[in-house]
Length: 373
View (cartoon, rainbow, N blue to C red):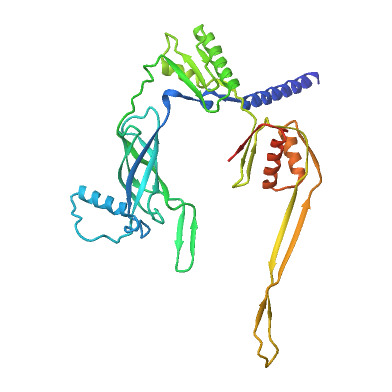
C-alpha cells in the first residue's frame, strides 16, 4: 500500500515538473526567432513588364499609351515590324513586378514574385508575364521573372450587374523569378556577428547577450557577446571557431523575451490588440451614445373634385433623438484578464471600447503606449 502511494506521488511530481517545463518552454524563444543577422538582410527588386493572354480584361491602349509603346518595343526586339495603325486589343496589361531577394542566394535558384497592374486593366486572371528583368537599388539586374500569374480574386460582370471577390489586378508567380547575379557576401570575411532584434528592447538584448556568454564561457572559456543598445548585439568570433558554425550553435539558444506594454487600435476595421503587460489605474468610466433618426414621409394633397386646384406634395419630416447612457463603471486592470472583463462589463461595441481607451489614455490612467493605425 505504501509502495503504491509512493508511486502515485512520484507520478504526480513528474506531471508537475513536465507542466512546469512546458510553461517555461512556452515563455522562451530561440535566438533565431527574435533576431536577424545584419549581414543576411533582404534586398528589394523591381521591374516593369507585360502580362499577355488576358481575356479582354487588359489595358485600354488608348487610355494607357505606355502599354502600347511597351508592346511595340517588345515586338521590335523580337524582329516583328509594328508599322501601321494602333491596335485595339485588350489582352495585354502593363504591370510592376516586385520581390525580395533573400540573403545568401546563388544564381539559378528561384524566388516568388508579385505582379500588380499599372494601367486600367480589370483582371490579370489567366495572364502570363513576359520575361521581365528585376533590378536592385544600384541599377544592376539580379533576377529575371516569367510565368503564369496566379490571381486569387475573380471578376464576373454582365450588362447590369458585376460581382467581384478579392483583388483581381494583382497576383503572384510562385518560383517565377530566376536569380542571375549573386549578391556580394562578406559573411565569412567579417570577424564578428551583428544580431539585430526584430522588436528592439533593452531587457531582451541583455538576455540574448547573457545567454550567448553563458554558452561561450562553458565552451570557449570566454565571453563573446555584448549588447550595444536596445537593438544590436555584437558577437565576437572565437579564434578557433568557424563563423557559420558559431551562428548555428548560438541561434538555437533559448531566451526569455520582453516587450513594452502596447495597445494597438485600428479604427478602420475596429480591431483592438491589448498586450499582456497593459495595466489600467483605477478610473471611473461612463459611456453613452446619441442616436438621431430622420424619417421623410411626404404627403400628397389632392385638390377638390372639379376644382382648378393643383396636386401638391407637402413635405413631412419626423426627427427622433435617443440618448442612451450606461452606468458608471469602475475599471482597474492589474492583469489582462481583469482589464478585458472590465471593458466587457460596460457592454459596448469595439468602436466604443476604442473611444474609452483613448479617453483613459488622455486621463493618464492607461499604463501603456497607445498605437493608432
